Length: 115
Image (cartoon, rainbow, N blue to C red; front, side):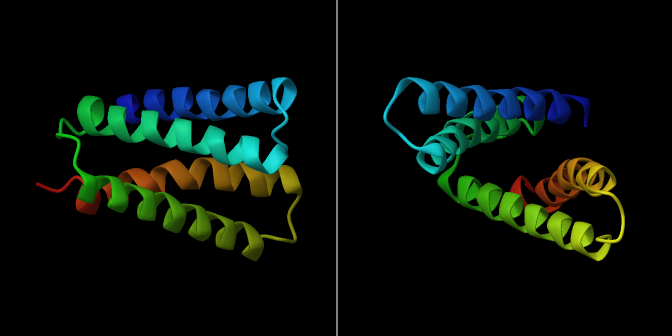
């Protein structure tokens, strides 16, 4: 799980700094820059999660599963956050930030990279 977290931190930084670079130095808008940043980070994350964390070869089927897991984990985390809507935004964001990687790691380990 430690290596998964390290790759996740780098992935987040790549997403953030790619998006900031694009929005500040190109004619791309916020959404376009964010999507490109996500795609760059996704490519990095999938590659390193496959090779470094789960010790698997890069495969198109795994890339598709990886993407689906990320979307499902995000949706579930946001759903839990919405259930906790009576709490402060800081607590809700903390729940999402903690829950998302844990859920994604669990699903990746039993489905995406299951050998």
